[in-house]
Length: 480
Image 1 (cartoon, rainbow, N blue to C red):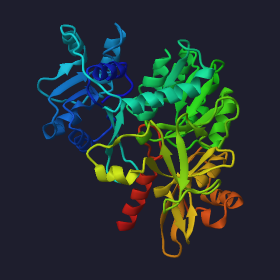
Image 2: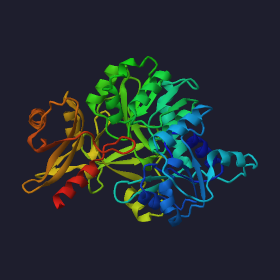
Image 3: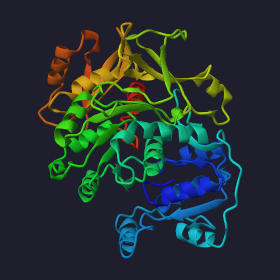
Image 4: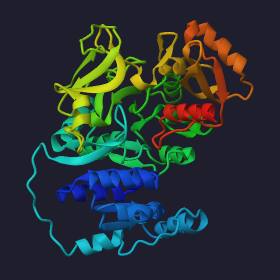
């Protein structure tokens, strides 16, 4: 339970070599969310950054955790950087709340003690679960996706097969602004890129754009993974012109839809194509990605990675043809074993070997996949399906818009109406201007009826905009 620190891969591979099961945890979890994940997984030990230990103290008694190893942000840095970083974090920024957990061991002390022991061998098979990666899934409470040796090695090899014609083993440098506890960075950086000897430059806090830009200036980055919101923020940052992108070969966007205006601006600024891919925790995670040979298609999620089959089905499970929208299903060696201790949820998600993603998609005539939207985010206006992605991508093309999100809110006449949330790039932008712009490019029932301007939009720690939180805020307003 930590941000991007060198301690993370050390713990990861040490635990795997010892035959343990990894449970990745978002350090921004509340005590309630921690209690659920730790109790549900049955975790017995935790390695946690001291910044979050006070939250652990509140719920430790409700879990099976007996071993607590704490670490500091600067612990693996050399002298004097370690002392300076820890002093700033603890004393100046006050980022480490007081806690009192008996019998904790520091990360350095654990390594020191470990030198006295030799590693015992353990039997392992391809189908052993080695990672419980928690996800909200398509519905309901957070569940542990059981990812096996086979799942993770398969996805590692699938990603390698896609990338290697364009990379040189042992010579690449990748920027890792996404947290490694998230399955995207976990599989891409900790497994795939590390397997070809890539140097991953860890960004501890990607919300600090200055630190991201500094990392890009300090290292000749050849590969960059991120999310739409991060690429958008960087492409519009005043210091982006100071970065030398001459070594950048590959930029990959995932975890949320990459908007066309953002991809176009990124290519303009960096000279590198922003290739969109698609995945989900239950698929370890990569399912498809755009080719890197110049045949990629903006606005699509590319082609399935090797050994992966995809299909589109209707509400009754019937297979649909090209250019027909329905639920995307996936079959391949990277598809999870199931949800931990949740056979009913597993049966609802994996049907006859096919993973039901909960995403509405279509397959174009030439085989490229296109995501329409999440089923649960779809807005129903007077019987017509309206997909937020389409609205958001169009509105994002307005020169005065920095970020936007569309949701459905109840309406007496049409069942639901579209409400748009916008972060301005230009302060002069008005609601009237937004709606008139939408009328020029969207059919009538897709045009937002309400527009709300905000200084920022709620996001996950990865940077994915939380439409769900916006919907919950709207429902709370209506009740009050």
